[in-house]
Image (tube, rainbow, N blue to C red; front, top):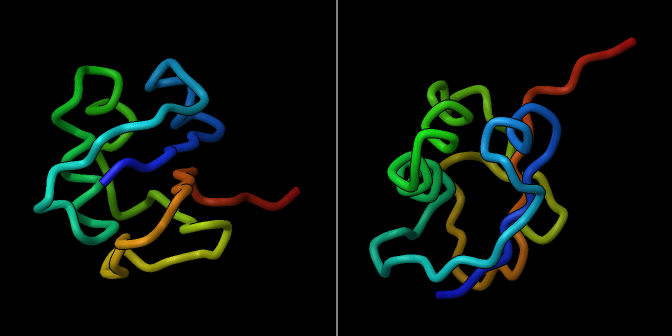
Length: 85
């Protein structure tokens, strides 16, 4: 499955790019699977996703829990927790 990934804030800074399109392995079926897979893609990904529980995710611009299936999603956004101000 090919999917567009978009990275925001310090996730983008640590990974070193704002977006990319990746072909995901068949065993990457949920948001949690995706975060685990991405951590294997290099040092920047490992640094950005070392605490996956804090990463927020949107599937096709809809917030999703880590157990949510990603099947059919065309765009997946990853971002850190929001802060007020």
